[in-house]
Length: 228
Image 1 (cartoon, rainbow, N blue to C red):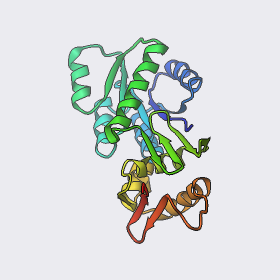
Image 2 (image 1 turned 45 degrees about the vertical axis):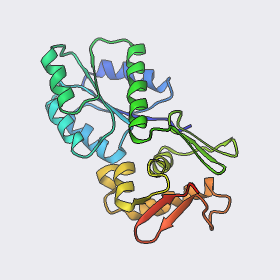
Image 3 (image 1 turned 30 degrees about the horizontal axis):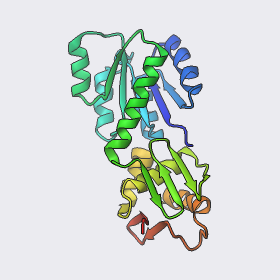
Image 4 (image 1 turned 90 degrees about the vertical axis):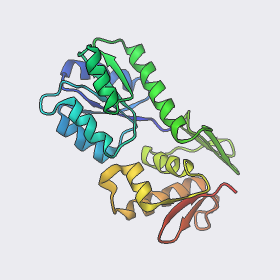
């Protein structure tokens, strides 16, 4: 099972010290940024599965960070803020936030909100969370991949690439679409990323990586997950 990657954009050190072990102990990978600028840079370079964003950052207004993220990312964004006025919540949701959690909050509520956000993100792109292609089975809700019932261990990037193909099962995914969805803006034009990671995916999934059955190449266009 691939661990979802969470980016925390929060300047309060004490809260980061609480969040990082809490999330790590619940099988999440965690990145942190203490400023809006650093958070935007990390979001572009790592394309996390979900972002926890504080509105009261020292360099950029949280709403500006949210707007910048929504220019290219559809990943869930959960606001964590001490601002508890209705107008602040409405503003954040109108700008594209998926949820709003007011400080202080407990670990269990935060974890529940994260689970809901990730589940909704999966359901948005694929109505059926389980996809069976011959011996290959993808459970997008559980983030599990198996071949003939045997778990396949994938890195986070390998899983995201397979997930992006699964969301278009049977259809061609272009190089640009895959690079943007898996790597974010930093991947623009970097088609060698796809060649490298498609090679590692095929070695893990295909019975014969030199004669792909599931992960098919569409020359000069992109790749397709074969569901026939």
